[in-house]
Each structure stands twice: as structure tokens, then as C-alpha cells.
Image (cartoon, rainbow, N blue to C red; front, side, top):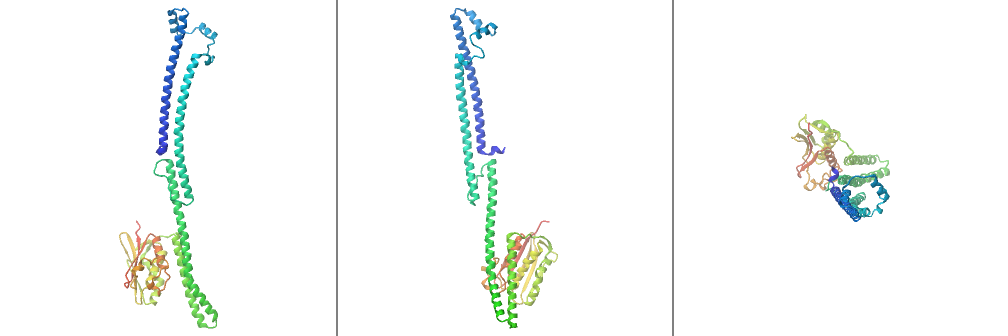
Length: 410
């Protein structure tokens, strides 16, 4: 029984069993005492009657015969009725019986009163200990309501009450996690808004300046075309920034559900670099794919393609004219890895631990294009699918980004 697992309840049950034993013993003692008292009363009364008869000159033989007789005659009942000794006669009018009842009543009263006091004291102690537990639990729960989770309900004991405390603790843990999550979401939203505001200041200021120049020289077609083109560049930068920030925000908020299915890795990587081939050709760079053509991967094709594309863009940004970007893939017993390598300037050791931070730009690459969101977005996409994105690089020897996906059991 789970009820008896509670130590306080178990002790109270043992107390009730002990009280029942005490009650049984008291009943037996009272019965023995009553039997002994009745015997003494019978003997004393018989002695009184015998003495009175002998005093009246009745022979001992007659007295002995009368004392041993167990028959009741109408004459005897009539005589007792004349003496006022019937079933309706009050015990107060029978001195010997009255004294016996008083003695027996006092003993019963004292015994019952003692047992009642023992039962009351034991029950009161149990209720006091129980109340202390309830007050402590109520105080802890009130702290939970106020957001203070520094104290804990007792859970080291067994019993239904402490099972309830354990359930309340689980609820408190869930509420605490939810509160922390909400706090983190608020901090994230605050940081995101601050980042967006900071990143939009530069292109907005530039566009305002371009607009003023165009307004001041509306008849100068060359100036209008030049600064209109610059405004277009700023608008595209703002569009890219806003889209990336929204994607990262959705990934962090968990509002994106990846639709995983089996895809051919060659097709996935080809789709990722399709829009970058023209840029690579224009910049005198090459993009090469290398891997088993039929190799497959279970992932979300659209999002994974975007992650690979961001890594290729980053490689093109840091690769010199005539350089090469290699996309290769291989399967191990537990992983499928896609690697994006370049032969560019590489990454300094002090920058390796920061490149996946949002808007992070190394002092050595401030002259290269980018807004510092491509790598964080790729990392969020890969990790959101249960994968891992890692990087290896040495200054002057290029960089290698590796996407590792655990193989699903067939």
C-alpha cells in the first residue's frame, strides 16, 4: 500500500495498532476485575444473609440448604417484592449493589479517560507534524509563485504526499524552464532588434545621402544613374540583411519545421552553387564538385542547400583571383560529411572561435564583402537538423568547413 510508505502515516498506523492492543488489554483487565468484584459481592452478601439467619436461630443445616438452593419459588419472589427488591428497584436503594456500581464505574471512567487521552495525544502529534509539512510545502509553493526556485519540496521520503510533492517539483521545474526560455527569448528579441537597427543605420544613411545628391542634381543624368545604382546596392544589402535576420530568428525560435527526406548529395550541392557559378566565372574563380554521384543524404533539401550556398559564398569572398572552391562529400560508418574548402587567405587562430557569431567581422577581412550572417545562419540550419558544422584553417592556407550529418538507421 502506497499509503503506508509515508513514514509519518506508518508511525500513526503503528500507534493505532498499539492503541487497539491497549484497548483490548484494558477490556480484558476490566472483565477480570468485574468478575472478581462480582464474586466478592456475592460472597459478602451471602455471608451477611447467613449471619443474619444464624442470628435468628435458624439451624446451620437450613441455612446451608438455603445457600445452596438454585430454585426460585413464587413465595420467594413475593417476599422480595414485599421488601421492595425487584427489577424496577433503583440501585441506590440497594447499598451493596450501589457501592459495587460506583467502584466499577470509577474504574471504567478512569480507564476510558486514560485511553482517550492517549488516543488524543497520538492523533494530535500526528496532525501537528503533518501541519508542519503542509506549512513548509505551502511556503515553498508561494515562493515558486513569486518566481523564487531556490528552495525545494521534500522528496526523499516515500508515500502519496511526497509523490504529490515530486509532481509539484516537476511542475515547478517546467515553469522555471519556461520562465528562463521566455527571458532568453526577450533578450534574444532585444539583441536582434538592436543588431538589425545597428546594421540598417549604414545603408539607410547612405541612401539618404544618395537621395539628397539626386535631388540636388535632377538634370544631371550621369549623377542620377550613378547614385541610383548605389541606392540599388544599398537596397539589396538591406534586403539580404533582413531576410537573413528573419531566417535566423525563426530558427532560434523553433518555428521552422525541417522536412527531411532522402536526396542525392550531388544534386543538392549542384543546386547550392547554381546561382554562384556566374559570379565565380566573373571573378576568375572555379567551383568544383567531387564525390560519389549516387550518394544520398536525409535532410531538408532547401535549407541544407542554402547552408552550403552560404559557405560557398564565404569561400568566394576570401579566395583570390584564380582560386578554387572544392565541394566534396564522403560517407563514414556513422556520418555523411560535406566539405567546402578554399585556397584563400585562411582564418587567423584568434578569429576561429568567433566566426559563427552574428555580425562578426575579422579586422583582416573588413575590405571583403559580407554582413557577418552567412556562417551563423548555416550553423543554425545544420544544427537544427541534428548535424554539426566545424571549421579548420591556417592563415594563408585556406579554410575547410565540414558539415557532418549522422546517418539514420534504415
